[in-house]
Image (cartoon, rainbow, N blue to C red):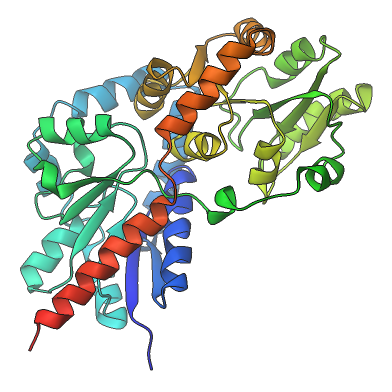
Length: 375
């Protein structure tokens, strides 16, 4: 018997949207579905997608003022106008995917408005769902034809309500992340695998493939002044940064660990005492799942700043703007046990467990109910 299919629409503007799609796909497979993940914009306009991805990533490093103007400027636009503007993007490719795979439902982890409009035009009986992957709600996510929104927190739900989305169409599910963040693990074997001394205070820095976290070398050397710290730097796929930091790894063979891309990032999170990172929606959700205290560096205006603001207001993160501020904040965390404890408690409070399951269970149950109503 052929397995039912579900279409997941996403995009490669940063890795978070894809990671959320993968988490949903895994859960769907566990429920007997065949998930089809589509980078709809990339498949429809390959060259344009590459160009805009490059511009998007560079805007985080060099064009923060422009991105701020764009994000908060468009945040004031009429949601219906935005939806109408983007209704045709990727429509031809989407039509092909629906014809080939005949999905039971469609889930978007990126603001793509073509699916609901196409379904209405062609009179398909395919419900569409949207998963918002940040702790804020930009109007680009909003479409009057979306059946249900799945959001990270109440603050996002309230944001949608301000844009006239009926609260019954919003489920506070949390952001979907990999199931590995909920599994049990043997910490001793992880310490051994990454050559980390269990008695040390482990500070992890996520530098990122695009190196949007600046002055990593200076920051690492500042932190290494404390002999009780063991520093882990994850460079992602940024080979240039990795090579730049190699001399530091050679100079501090016992207290500095350098990695490129890490598949099992959850293992490093499990043995860390705090995480220095940019506030991307998926990364901070993964940290919250493991109650890993967060230090944010210079959030870019837009969704990063909104994510950082929410976590900071909840007492779950510290926002910094210089390497020296980061070092001071990390030291404060370790000097103040109550602060560390409070941050962990707030992270536990923020996080919603098994979000991918909540979302897929809802979509599957709605699909099954609909099938019972059909003649």
